[in-house]
Length: 275
Image (cartoon, rainbow, N blue to C red; front, side, top):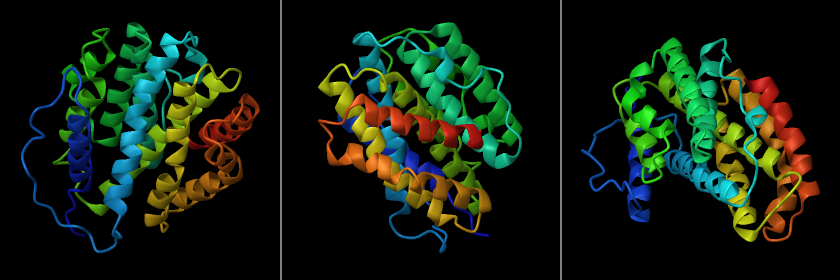
């Protein structure tokens, strides 16, 4: 099996995206250049799709922050339990991604203790999967803190970059993909639960649309590893969302709470079977 520095490349790509956006805590240097071998089984466009999904997941921090500013209540019940455990490597990888979304949501609402509890859960799950070094505890503590000047997506990217020596083989690339999918599902779930009764302004509406709009890239990531039965199941479940998502994508500025509520129920079912 070829060595594959897939996760590193996708995260370096994300770093460049974040740097170009500027902001406090901006990374001035994207870091060293890495050489890598691309496995023959990974089709062209895979890395680009992975970068799109990760960018949208991390930009959800801005959506959550704006929701807080507009008076959306913090919904602890929308997140996974802080003591949630995951059985099997695929679910552990998905759990890492999901807890990461919960961590960003908590931190966006300055819920420091809740964010710290999620950080501990994330590190514990990463240790169980054997990728604990991917997440620098000091960086994660800053992620969970209240300092509003900290660019949290940049910190999370730095933490992920520490995984460069662990996620090489194609099997590890599958883990990385499960993490991304888990983070997407959890972020979409939290957004749906927050908006199913109230859409306060256009900024929230467009932010949610952008999250929803990345589902096609997530479906593509699933199909890359179609020989994995769990990935195939996820792909089928996500495809079943298409009619509900199409309503929102066709009318980005005019969908209503009924549309979001229908999607919320379907996403919750996928989430309950996935984690």
